[in-house]
Amino acid sequence: MSLIPATILTGFLGSGKTTLLKRVLSEAHGQKIAVIENEFGEENIDSDILVSDTQEQIIQMSNGCICCTIREDLRGALRDLAEKKRTGELVFDRVVIETTGLADPGPVAQTFFMDDEIAESYLLDSILTLVDAKHAAMQLNDRQEARRQVGFADQIFISKTDLVAPAEVDALMHRLKHMNPRAPQKAVHFGEVSLAEVFDLRGFNLNAKLDIDPDFLKDEVHDHGHDHDHDGHDEHVHGEHCDHPSHQDEPAGHGHHHHHDDDVKSFVFKSDKPFDPARLEDFLGAVVNIYGPRMLRYKGVLHMKGTDRKVIFQGVHQLMGSDLGPAWGGDEARGSKMVFIGIDLPRDIFLQGLTQCLVV
Image (cartoon, rainbow, N blue to C red; front, side):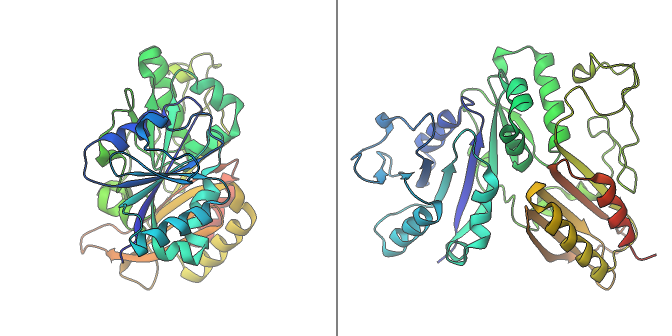
C-alpha cells in the first residue's frame, strides 16, 4: 500500500489555522482528509462542519473527511488511523496534523522518522506555518516557540495583512526571510489558499529542492539584499542609506543584523571545491551531536569527491539523511550549497569546519 502523505500545520494563536483547515476540508477537491487535532488548542474545528458523536475520538465529517482529536499520543493516533485505513474501516487519502499555537513542530516531524511503524505507513510531506501579520512582531519578539515555527516551515502563510500597513508587511516578510530563506511566503486572505500550495510540497523529499528549484546552486543576486560569497559570509552591509522598513531606527552602519536580531537565523555555506566524504561525515556527525536540538532545518546539494552525482542531504534536529541525486551535467559548474536554520548556531564554527572538510 502506498504511503499516506502527512502535513503538519502550525502557527501563532489566532493566525487562522482553523480557517485554513475549514477551507481545505470543505473544498470540493475529491480528496478525503484525516485531521489530527491537538485537543489543547484554543480553537477547535467548529462542530457545525462535523457529523459528531463527541464520545468518539475519530469523527466522520459530512464531506467524508475525518477529524481525530488526540487525547494521548500522536504515535497512537497515527497508528490507529493507518490500521483503520488498512482494514477499510476508514477511507482517507492524507493526514493533516494541526498543532497547538505554541507547539514545537520538531518532535512532531521526528515522529515520522524515528518510529518504524509510522515510517512504514506515512510520508511526511511538509510543515506549513501560519503567521498573523497584525500580532507577528510582538509574538516573534516575545515567544521563541513562534520563532521556531518559522524556522521549521517549508511554506509560510501570512494572514491578516489587510489589517496592517504595507510597509509593516514588507518588514515582516524581510524578517521572516532572514530567519528562514528556504520557505516561500504568501499573504493569504481568510484562508483562501489553493491546494497546490498546501499539499504535495515535498519539503522532506531529499530531491525535492532540485526538482522545484533548479537555481538552488546559483548565486542569489538579490536575496533580500544579501549576496553570499563562497565561504558563506554576507558581503552586503546595510548602512545608513538603507531605507528598508526593518532597518529604520538603527544606528548608521549597523551591519546586516537588523533591528530584531532574532535567535532563529539562517546562513549559507557555498564552495566550488569538492568535499572529502569521510571528513564531512565526521564533522556533520559532531555538530549534529552537539547542536542538534538547536538545528531546526538544514538542507544542501553537495559536490563530493568520488562521485559524479549530486549528493542531497537534509535534517531536522539530530536526524540527518543523505541520498545520491542526479548526475552533474557535463557543462554544469559543480559546487556545494548548504542552508542551516537554527537557534543561535555558531556560524563561524560551522563555516570553518565545513571549509576544512573540502579537498584542498
